[in-house]
Every structure is written in structure tokens, then in C-alpha cells.
Image (tube, rainbow, N blue to C red; front, side, top):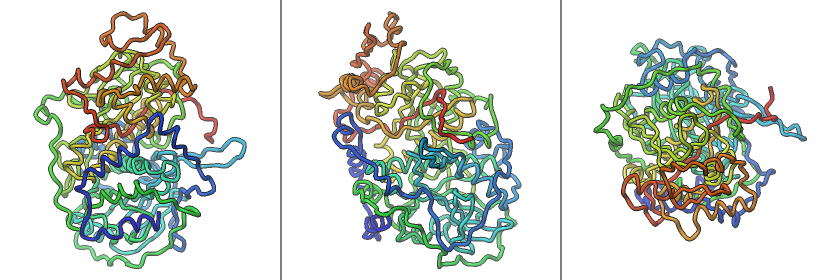
Length: 614
């Protein structure tokens, strides 16, 4: 949105609307899906106008990176554990790392590169998949690296080309210092590496329209975690900075009239004192290369642009408020962390990861221990400025604050009763809220996608929008989606490491999720009525013989959730989950719910995808 993004931000100099948090709730409510909205507001894709998935800078110097240059044998779960502790996989804060083109190639090859190709049946057209997943495989996230002191490559600001596994030189000189000053991080002015992530909203909006801002932020969370895991395994721990003056950083990167919005930076403290005082050239101010036009025409989506505008921070960014983690008083009562076993190397795991198109419901069940291991590592701490555990010269050992809680729809997990469970991070255990077959419910809530019922389990990620907005204003909307994406990335990689598959689901019936989980009271159109209407239209077709078998079980712990002899679920009980659990009445106004769903996920045994090339 070259013209539209620039116009939306044109008059924000010196002021903003970040504190007007009613905008956050208004946007989230306006972009909700419902059973009726998807039928009354259809959208047809204009394939001739599909945005190019690859940004290029015509005329910029191109530097090819060595492909398949190897990777440390760091374990997948061991790397997640090391990231949570603020160490490398070797257990120390820093390792001696040889920063050169090979190291940089390994980083990008195992975090942001193309990992596979698919071929469209009948047309033989090919399209790429990447290590970092993306909603609709549209990839709005662009990657920039500022390098200082890397062997074999000049200091400068580079744009990463995943289609070529190459770098485009945007400007030579000491760009890490310029970016660090724009981020107001004086300790990082001599950093050897800063990774900048921008988002091109139009790529997602082409398909998902105004709701696309959510997906862009999901994708950023996935990309952030993909990069953090790779750098941790490569011996260079760092953290994420996302609370900055947008206008100042945009100008510093030369993106003031671009279709890209800077959204997050991965910053790595100076590797050693030996780099201090080295002579460097000032950054080249005239950037090289002309960005390509991504499509013939761009369609403005005002709700999306308005939401982004409302999250902008002015030049006078105040210090980040300190957010106390939930249940901080019981921090010392946590059970010991699990050993990361079984484990497999991270490198081939991330290159092998795919988004499942569907799952095989006939597969043997997952082990409960595997599910708990996945959730444990996927929700562990990670270093970011807004979580309150990153921002200085070293990563703080303090626990970060969480805004997202996973709720599970368990279908096929050994030694775990089917039903709805909440993941309690403080005790690292599943808390069962409802007993019964929920395959059809999970599929319906996930926009009538059968894969959520065919999986071994599905997840609703519930974010505390009220706390996030009270602390950070509208900017908190970015952070909760970043967090959901980061959890999702670890679920993806962890499932792959355990021999399973996963997929992220950005589309769901928002308020039906809230009603079913008890955050919102039933309205005139109940979840059960909508589910039955969808099945009547043959949109949700799950065999679900387990529903009929479950009807024979008389030992119901949640008597209101009854499976009839026909296998039809009566859904009058589940809205009482939170009332039973916490003794609080559900909020009636869906526009201002404190806790709302921001992401869905599913894990199971993927069916083969015939479009994948060997």
C-alpha cells in the first residue's frame, strides 16, 4: 500500500492516537467472523492482481549467500529451553562466534529462506514454501540485516532475497549505529547485527481484507521466533525490540514513502569488547535500488490502515512500563522444568516443517506426555522489550509477562479425556474444563474447517486485550499477536521434532469461540444452532464415530454437555466453563470483552500433500 500507508500516517507528526484504546476493540470487533458474516459478505480473489511474494530492489548490488552451509547440532527443545534462559544451547550467555557470510547464510537459511516448492495440478505452476510460515502463504514480512564487522562482507544495510538466498545492498557503512540510535538503544550502537522486520500489509489484505492486520502480526511473531531460535542455536542470543517511535525508525531506514511498515527488530549485544572503538564509515544516506511494484493496483482497506495508525508511537516514546507476570507470587512453586528429551536437531527440523492441509483422524493418538512437552516449551519465556525481560546490554533473568493462554480441544490424546482443557503455565499442566467429544465443535469454530476436528488436538489462543491495551495502549494489539505467533512457531517446530505436524488457523468464528468457552453469554443464535446449520449445509463433515461411542459413557463430569444417540452435541453447557472455573459472570458485550481469541492452531498426523515436490 505504497500510497495508502503513507497517507494514513502523513499527519501523525508529534502526536498519535495510541491511548485511544476503544479503537483497538472496535477494530477487533469489526473484523470478527461469524456464521452469517462469511455468507453475506463474500470475497472473490483477483488472481491477476495478486501481489508479488518477493520484494526486489532493482539496481542494488546482489550478493549470493552459500546455500546449505551446515548448522550446529543443537536440539530443537534444547534451543527453546536455552532461549527461555537467555543463553545459547551451550548454556552460556555468549560463545565465540565467527561472524561471516557462512554464519549469516546459516541463520537466514534456517529461519527465513525457501524450504520447498509445490506444483499446481494441471497447470504445472510452481510456488514456494518458506521456513517461516505465513497466513495463506502470502508472506507480508520482509527481512533486513544491518551488519558490522562481518568477515568477507562490507558493513551496511542489506535486504534479504529468499527467492535467491541473496542479499541486496541498500546502503554501506555503519547502519547498526544509526538503527540503534533510532531505537534509542545506546548500548547497541556497536552491535555486530541488527535484524529488522517490516510488514507489507497489502500482501495479506489482497486475500483477507481488513482482517489482514491480525495475520500480518501473527506472521511477524512466527518470523521473530524463527530467527531467535536460529541465532540461539548459532551461539548468539539476543532479543526483540518492538516498542519504538515508528516515524523516527521509518525515516532512519529510508522507508518513509514505502509500502513497508517497520514492526520489530532483533538486537544482539556487542559480541566482545574487542570490537569497541573500531573505525567505521558513516551510513550511506542515499539508498541503493528501486523497490518493485507488487501488483497492478492496490486496494485500500481503511479499517486495517486505521488500526495500524492507532498503534503508532510518537517520537517522544516514554519508557516501557513494567508488566508483572501473572501468578508472580507463586513463581517459586513451579515444578522443575522438563528435560528436553526426546529431542532432534533444530536445523533439519525447521527446514522440514510444513503447514498441514488436513489431518488423518484414523491415526493412533498422541501421548499426553508429548502434548504437555509441546505446550511447556511453546509457552516458555522469550526475550522482548514489551515482556519486560530485554532491553539492556544483557538479557534479564526476570520472567516475562504473558498475554496469551492456550485452550485445547482434545480429540485423540492417550490418557487424556476428550474435551476442553486449559493450559496452566504456572503448574505446567492441563486443566480439564469439559468432558466430551468436541471434534465437530472445534471444526465449526475454526471456520468450518474439518482439519481442526481431525487433528489430535486443536487450540484457541485467548489474549488478555484489556491488560495489553491498559499497559501499552493500542500498541498492545501488535504484542498479543506477536506472542500468539511465537507460541505457534514453537508448536510447529516442536510437533515436527516429535514426528507430528501442525497448522496455524487465523480464521475462526470469534464470538462463537467466546460463547463456547464461556467468555460471552449465548445470544439468540447459539453455537449449537449455527453448528447444526453448517452441517446441514454439508460444510462440516466429520465422521466422528467417537461421538456416538461417547454417548454410552454415563460418567459425565459435565452433565450439561450431552451427546445424543444421533451423535449430535447439545452445546448448552460449555458457556459455563469460566463461570464454573472462576465464579465470574460472562461479559455480555462482545465489543469490549477483556479476553478474546486471537489465533487457532491444530496438531496431528498430516495427510500427504501430492503437490509437494521432492
